[in-house]
Image 1 (cartoon, rainbow, N blue to C red):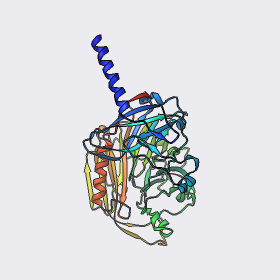
Image 2: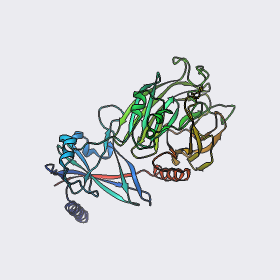
Image 3: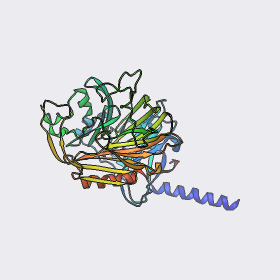
Image 4: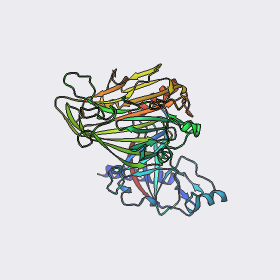
Length: 454
């Protein structure tokens, strides 16, 4: 017992010494006396830049009873800002950050994903050295400073007379013109622009004529999987036949949309989070009858600041095949594919592209030739995905997954093009996706949280 007490005393003394050795953050009149230390670990032996960090609510009970405006997230390894000049003070008003000591207040967000009025995840993005255990702090106290400009956006809007969800980073955007397969949008200059696209109802292929920096739609979807989508394989007569929510026995409108929504698949969209660092939209698929089974599923797509990828979680809320069935995620094979990589749950397709609006049958808009456009799909290794190429519906790269006990799986989609601000070659895009896939399979770990008082 004495040995245990001595060990506890030494541990407490060590913690006190560590706290004393790590100076406390201040921001002019904000001089906090209480904070929570949160330890984060990079499980990879490689550095990570701009890495997403998800801290579940259950991991930090010390934060449960404090209002968002009474918490300031600080990275002690980053330099604080100096005294802002008069012009900056006037532009930012009374909520602009003031001079800091002992660290820098970083952007983050508390996201209420189940819409119950309580946040579920604390989200941030930061850098890690190989195998680093990084310490960040949440400081308590009334502190009304810290604008956080949005670097991502998500919304649902009426776009060319039908409801469409959008999610984007500064580099790449996605939308569901067709409700089961993502369109891909590339920007030439980093910016958010989907609100302009749907607000002004601009043609995604023609916005370059307004401002070349706005970019363009860079992938034709039509009846393919486009930049990403899901399906099931449930045909007892053909194990590799793909059943998609948009193409059912009841789908009879134009051959590319579902039919009567009371009898055929229908969809519902909700924005779950909107910046600054990630933006999330939920896509709900309902009343899906493939002819071989009945299904319903919720997908949550997430865009990340500074990145060319989005992630998706899929939860089947109804999964009733008449025989057996498997999950599927897929992307369209680029028509001019000259670059292809596939390893485990990752597949990358790219090539030179002549970008044109497939609906422009009158040829009103000029074709746009680019050196490369590419798309990628990554399914997490723990789902043991199996790669399959399907010739059907213009050719698609698929990942096939055996049903999980909780009827859930996760995947990532990425896109790039030679006109973007970075990764201007197919090889550079492929290397980026390979790095992202490694990190996606090894998320940052939350190692603990401790309340400290000065």
